[in-house]
Image: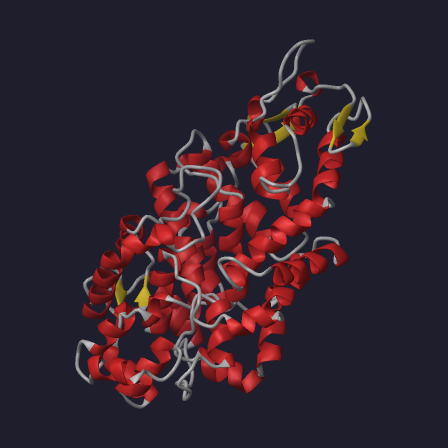
Length: 487
């Protein structure tokens, strides 16, 4: 019998902690293992002392899903430059606690073919839980923010065909390994991802005989949404030629020599003729190398550098970033050969980043996770959390079109009522699998006023102080306040 990740976890680092499991009541197994094996998650709690969002709060809010109670003290002790350097090298951070929580989601275990043994409904919950748990608990916070950015940029809705199973493989094999690597590697992995081949019909892109027209669906989105941008200077001819380059890639199943769900290139389905994309000739007879020649053209094009720079700036700086901000990140993209980490660093070094404190509106996923993090909540990331996100219109992997969930605030302004309800339910302990210890938080911060400053990222104004009084509702009101909707 194949050992699951869960059984491996139970048999290794955390096994010594299992003796004490009887002491923890009905908390989920992964929460119990993590806490018993590694101790308390948050250390000393420092509240902001400034009336405005200071450098520490600003960096933590933008480069994470919001600070946990102990994050400010840890960043202050390290220094912000060292903290950012560490976040940009996520592999150097020990994320065992987060990994233990996700490893306990057994539906995500196994190779691609094993995923077909799980019902789509269970996989959808498991995928959503893993996103919530990592965003809430991972020490690699900047990495998780970038993972969310790329999941939207290369959006795949989980409900189409075999994406019900292969969407899981896409996140763990495409997005996460390449999130802070080279953009070209990310695009290459996405192009031959089973889920992307299914979602945008790449598996049905074939030219078998003279006169056959290739399926252009993926080629169009590759140019418009993934690389050049809608105003990137390509034409319909370029879309057609790109589709010809991409013809022949397939996805299927093989049950001999083990159960494998695999991608392959079929020369009989490929257009072998010469192509020309954006003025660059791709010679005849290239076969599967046509894909890489196409990506060489697209990923080195100035429009791609500008388009990806703008995407990064919209994630970290402003909804409508200034031209000079985008240019600084574009230059980092070009000079680094498309390395993503230098682009993020360049965005954070711009004057506009420093001037944009509290200017971005939280999308529902960030709002929910930032509330969980700010309150040091214990959560299983399960159906109660996912249902709240679904009511707000931001459930992971459920956006139906290839452009991904919108970044601008306008589509999310209608979610405020559900946010207020979520804040009330979170503090009241009405969310199954999730709890907040308000009294412990107040003690940890040395008073309700300091806790409020932690929630807001600054000292409250006089008007806010008049409303956020020291009573049982202050935490709920702080989480529902206008200030907490922005970061």
